[in-house]
Length: 416
Image (cartoon, rainbow, N blue to C red):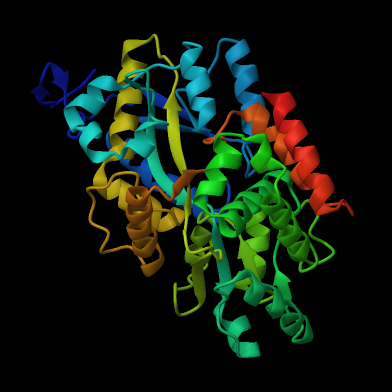
């Protein structure tokens, strides 16, 4: 039970609570890289400081597919964890199935509605209930660049796709791999959505990947997206197949490769390696049209109903710890993202995070912020998976861009 707690609005405030050592929270996740583990450690430390034992349940695999399989098995056996890292529509689906619990009492007392933007609440507060606590917002349409590699060839960072493409032979001549890539389907899906917003702009992105307009999916603009993806296919090394995303990031960190197109979770690997934004690496959005654009992903830990009252209280402690402003900052310094809360002091965060936070606000106001397709925010997992099969098939074959757009439109139609 709670000790030394203050009562407010009928709820035991969690910020000063200490629980008995028997209480535990099991957290299932796929945060297994160095930066991700360091980030999760900031939540764990806060939870254990409040007297709750932390039971870690990692499932390797950056895209989370393996974790989803394990979770489904656990649910079928009637043994779900206290919390699970989920993305986008998966949270909504599980909530609609009635399997998730809620932490509304915590959210009400701590004022989550005022602290979280609507784009974040959309994947945390389902049908009026907070079924998840958001840890951060990621930007997925990013290029991570080695300053040393660019200095070696005397080049500026690219601001257009034309500039991006002409860099490749210069890097090859200097013995540097132009683009580090991990050949896994989920990584190619994130590359694809970055290209959709970069080549087509946010309105086209929304039309194609949120509204799933078949005319947009099979358009000449989408053909240009695949054509640019084909250009990038020629910039990766021959050993890319099956490579984990963080190993690709390491290639940029150690100067073996010049760039990586990846969400800003990659920054956590640079930070974990002791590198400084601006001094050692650059974080730049992919080239855009004049309309700009920002593809966002919300990370959250979702909560499964805990019938035991003491375990439910321990779960509430976890929710409160995740949303503590100081934890949000520390978590995202390690993770590479920005806090889910908009009311935290970002002065301790690096220039990349501050720029990302400012642009998220600006693009949200301008209507140019769009939800990740690869991370199942823009649509459900079935549609995303069907499209990803086409995307990765294109990247790993001699399929033409025209063939790809026709297959994409067909796959999305059949998956709906």
